[in-house]
Image (cartoon, rainbow, N blue to C red; front, side, top):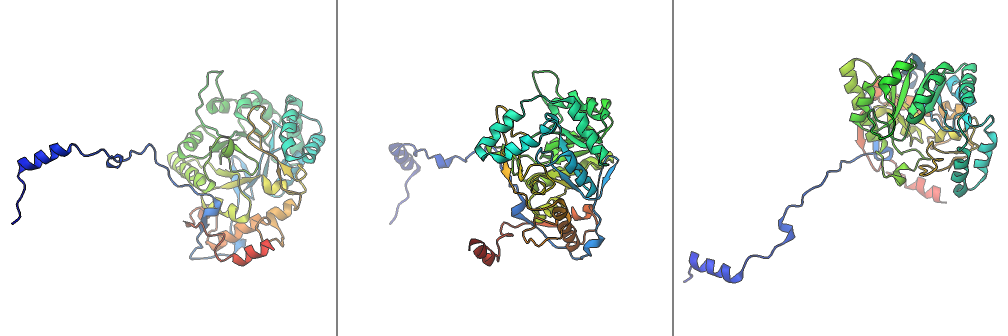
Length: 407
């Protein structure tokens, strides 16, 4: 017959055994912070619509302040991409090119020799040469001259400066006839704390100049919303995705472009509901193919800005190379010279015709075709297209393509 231990005997046994040993797994692991998943171009896909339309019927276009562009494409403010001549060519194609006012074009009467030297050395030497080349002071006469050259060609003159020098040169830029100012740095916010003299304040800037100001770069909802509330004309989206940028490696900072665009588009729409003023967002960097272009707009972009695809054109001044604005930094370069070769034209890049199958030419045609497949007549319609997480989108069923590329 079995017997049950009395409470007294059970307590005695526990005292004899002592307390249970401590096991770390008995304590729930506290979580310091949560990470959300973010997505880049190669991890998502656009879902076709239930209705399709002819690509010739879709409407493209971008409005920034009083300026209308028939093609919502911008060329990056990189010395090896945009010269005054390239800005004119881009304008004639229906888009907008931004000239870097803190580079070789405003330090040298003729930057051709510097551009040739940078193109002629190996990659390890290029950054040091750029650092030396950018040591010469900026010249106000060249700032005015470059703007005049663009305007003389009948183009909209858009120029880029960093926040640090915007206050110093904004009045000169406006007086020289510029149509747009792009205030651009790796990360730009509406609030900046410093122990030095007061930094750039957009509310004060807009009291002194009347031309539209595009500001970048941002990646988040709150920062974008705050910048829009200051009165900017458009916002650039993207931190570190560019081919020539190494901010993600040097600083570890950045957000993949699809997620960054979606978050900033939400800020744009929130601000529109709040104010009734629509501020376009421009996805900037990391865009290589027509597929990338289309995913930007489906993620919510109103326009895109590119460097590498334009750097490969015969119209670009960089001789098949390009580098970012932070590459020549004297103490902490956050970029590198990238070789893309000279293998196309501006016309082919934007409109074709092309015999390439890799999506690097006829980018406007790719956008029109994708919009037609989604039944989107306008960019605003295309922003509502369904997107899915699809990490196998570029590899599924492509074994023969990969095998051929290896032979």
